[in-house]
Image 1: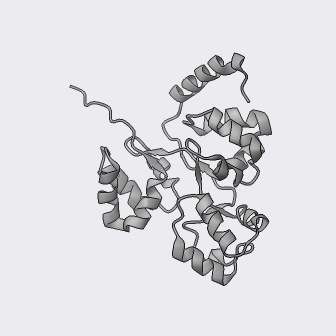
Image 2: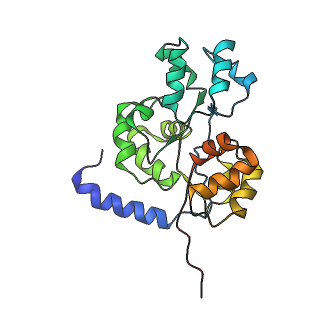
Length: 222
């Protein structure tokens, strides 16, 4: 946790780090084996710990989940104990937005614990993985930091995201690279719903919306 003496210096470091970012910044954490629970195929779900065919059937019917809390609630309703659900989350998870995550969401991230309910909110706004590495690794080391990254994301900026950024979104693929770029500038969620749902339907559009944010459009040069 930052002390008051370090607040100004830390804020300055965040600004400097933001200005120094490279052009390509994949905004969904790199997986080290954890898959997205909303897009993983049925055959793979059936191989997951503690998931029976009956639970998998219900899970598929209810997808997509808006949060890991929503998925956790369903699993407990289906008879799993919390420790069984936690074991599943080492294999499949619903990504958590670093800039808006609640304590309830953070505590469901394997390895996060109460410490990260302090650190995740304290260093907001998160703007890059370089920032995340710098601030979190000083508490838990880089290896543990890399493990946490596969459970979280920094929202992808619709108007300036690179193709790499867009492809980091689970299930987006080249189709969304094309559509996200084609309909720029993005100005409202209504526009996003209208244009993207034409291709993938509203439920999938809602799932994709979780990962994005509409960033300001730079004025055209005169």
